[in-house]
Image (cartoon, rainbow over all chains, first blue to last red; front, side, top):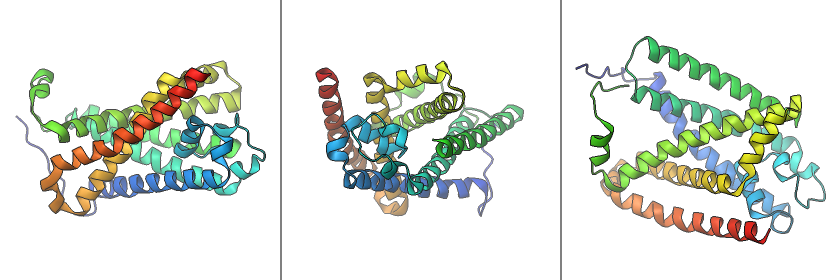
Length: 139
Length: 128
């Protein structure tokens, strides 16, 4: 039976990601609250149905509200929302793929395959972060 | 980090962790579901937007169906509220003593929020 290898206390990856997970989680909740509030101020109550408003809340992309009765789409697709979307994508991708790493490390033991999985998750993180930003800037 | 102990699934399921264990398990399941959903959705949007591919459109048609949306809304609401509970318990560690009560309080927030959302979405879906 192999005992757990404790990481050294201090500024290591585990500690940084522990803090980051909390900060990014709180930021994502706050950004969702900001998104839904500004959406309602822009007229979502009469122009969007609830499912559409939920999609907008989770991710403020204009494609999510394209099928609604919005008079001016520019209000929903300008640079402010693009910056907001990039923040959401970067925070959510880092939060999510770090969570995936934590879960996988719970069910694997340290060794070659765990390192390989960690590297694979790192590649996925980079890939989906970049593709996400590309889609935002291209939409 | 793996603890190097072998716990079979059945033995794990018999463990009486109660509310906090259910919250822990659902937090992992909903988190993994959101990672898979969002990644595939980003990929599908990329395929549709840049390549005009039918694959992206068919993935997004599944995602826009009411059944999928009801599931993913639950995952997102639960993960968000439970994550907020975890953050509060981490900031004030003395509250960990009331962990069980905190999960009850959490369901008092999650269930009305989700039931109301699901009710409006289903009513709208049935109305066409």
